[in-house]
Amino acid sequence: MSTDPQSSSTATRDTVLSVSDVNVSYGKVQALRDVSLSVGEGEVTSVIGPNGAGKSTLANAISGFKSFDGVIEYRGSSVHGRPPESIVESGLIHCTESRNLFGFMTVDDNLELGSYQRGDVAERKSLVYELFPRLDERRNQRANTMSGGEQQMLAIARALMSDPDLLILDEPTLGLAPIILEDISDGIDAIQSEGVTVLLCEQNVTFAMDHADEIHLLENGEIVRSGSPAMLRDDDYIRESYLGG
Image (cartoon, rainbow, N blue to C red; front, side):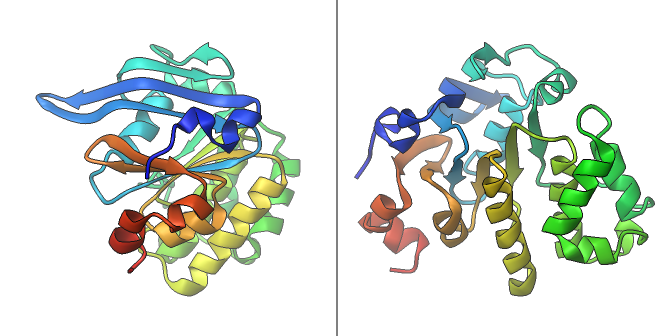
């Protein structure tokens, strides 16, 4: 079963992000092939797929870190050729898979850096500490002394400090223990309740199914399935390949 992304639920909402016929290559290797999707206002749209499918490449193209052919528009304006800092200033915030924390700095200092381009420091800090109480407990702890899961929380919280209009989360659950996964899950629910639009790039299909309004399966650089979680849970291929039958 395959559905047209434009015919799905996001089409009923104002479009925040539109990706049309995007191609990306690394030398002779084509990482993305004619990728098209849209992200609706206030919704969580997830791009799922195995490691190496092209999820991070897509996220990097959207946020200005990777050149591409095709059309990517954020709020109706093309991101093509724009530097990443300009894209950040417009409200599109990318929490990368590598986290990019300043390890020698405290949790509190990392958060303050997140509001460098956008956001009121005191207001945003109050919000993220409410979303992630574990970070509040560790606000004076250096980032490089925290667990991997706590560092992931900090990376997401720092992205939220920029007061995102569209938040790209790239593999937020990768390698996390179940107890930390619950905290991240609660955080994403809270983020959406704040009205933030989210593009979730995620290997954990079950996690994506639990949070996304719309899902696109990316394999070998191509979108091969699109639809709501309810639709894709009934897809034989997805159930057998990604949900354990």
